[in-house]
Length: 466
Image 1 (cartoon, rainbow, N blue to C red):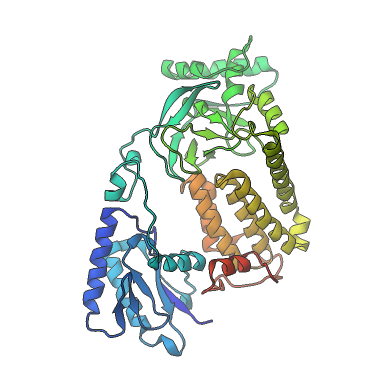
Image 2 (image 1 turned 45 degrees about the horizontal axis):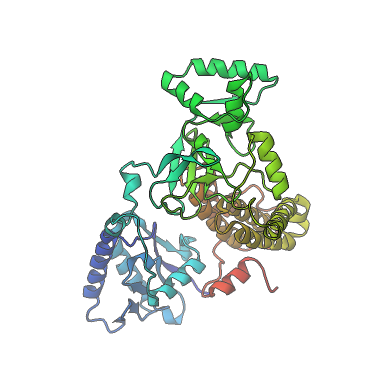
């Protein structure tokens, strides 16, 4: 198979004018260095180095991920000199973003080969036009709204829902919309009189402004325990299985949808709740998260009525009967597949079936949630990682960890403890506690196939056609 070496640019460059100018200057340096070298050819869309595997440097900076080649074998003569020189030039222009790696030293690139091959194919493809929400992305390649600390949303009255958050600007997928500390946290105490007394004590310790923020929140359970009613209507759990709920002055205004465009997550490192866009949100759209626990519409609506005191009329629950029946069937299948994947006996004794279930679940999630199921997809990739590493397959485990890491960044951010955890496993799959339980699929971390097209790589990844 040979040994590869090269460098990745992490994070990748944007379409902004600053990155474009830096890349243009870097390309001009490369052209000047090799202007008299017959093995370096300037093509319409890239520079080609005719050594090794003919590594390329595109003229469009945002398309570039990796410059690399095999450095072993009869065709590799001279390619290491090109790799070394181009890497040094790149470091002058881009500093620590340049990540050099060499498989001889058991170092591997940041991006998987599927991503790299897709990026190389894009060198010949024209870009689709984009409609930005401001002119600044063209200049900086970043979202200046966040940098200027401008709120991405405004609080509005939503018909039939009370207050809600509405996007003030276009919001890109993966954007952190909000990060907020709770006014206070509280367990779900019983009897309710004890909970009311506990909340009253917590309120006394808050400032007048914070007390008003709490009392401003909606109460779907009016009666002689108003504080408990507000908490029951608004509290979000401090973690997926936590019995502790947090009350937030702004996040608690975000309404529910069974097809949300954002995801809420408790960050135990920063002790705050974060909201990330899981798909593109247009200016004027309501920002929504999911309060439900999955399942078909009748189970979801019953839970929402009991736990939060409202009847869900979101776009999914309002589908026509035939469409709702189809949606319910998909959500029941999601529950079934999740249960099957989580069966430890099947993971040990029938790993191929478990991995096939992960693939099936991915298809159903994408069909049902229309690219907004990033949190569920992140968990799915971690399940696939665990199946692979349990049977000693470090190569697949590494790719699944990479995919899970990207999904975690989208729905939780880079500072999330779960994102950091999966990043460590991406770099060291063998560090997982299940590694070594079986050697049925044993492979080294670096044995990820190269040169496959997208379909071929996916077939390898999911062990299809074997």
